Length: 312
Image 1 (tube, rainbow, N blue to C red):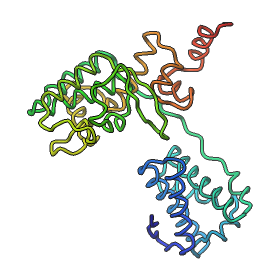
Image 2: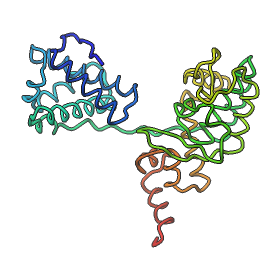
Image 3: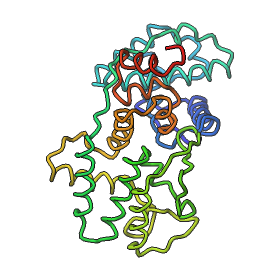
Image 4: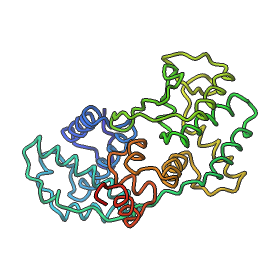
């Protein structure tokens, strides 16, 4: 992987170090291609800033001299360019990960630079659809394409997002070998972590109808959900179908495919679902993520805890 040059070309040793770090992140931490691309952009922005700030391209050796003032200067520069607190926090996190790796590799003491805190930001709560809105959206999607098998395909995918809480990448990553579904699907999520997700009869029926109409033969080693040319379906096709549906129904812009996954979680919770079980179904590593995902405040979380704990 080659790091692209910024306004100041990277020193060869730094370009090599960055490429090797990205390879390590991809290989040992199972980072997605999207994450690796984002990390590369984050580090190129940081190294470009250092080059201009010090008047010479940064090298792995020169990073040993980084101070908190350098890190604060980078943050101020990024804010001046319009970067929001959330994006800046992610960018600084990538930079710190790279600096820790360089520190271990080169034997540098980077405690001063690594002590810099990221900006605080308010985590935005998801906005799920109501059950009626979700059903109306699926009904509209069923009517939203002139080709019956394409309409059935889009409904099937969205039914899995809402009915199983799948990420869109997980639904579109299914292959022919996964069909017919059993009572539960084995889903490989972020970080290669597997989980079992029950499939409701309505989900089974939606996929079966799509496959009945689909002109492409079902093949074990091929995508379950096909694009119009037979390749693996891309997320933007589903995003477009739902955008058209929400415009017809007057739903807010937040009614996205990912909102269907939010809806799965919040509707389960409203029906009395256990928060820990919902965490497992969603594939969240942390219960606090599920808490934010479902819009639970701390008071509600403590109420759930007191109700569920055997000594409550």
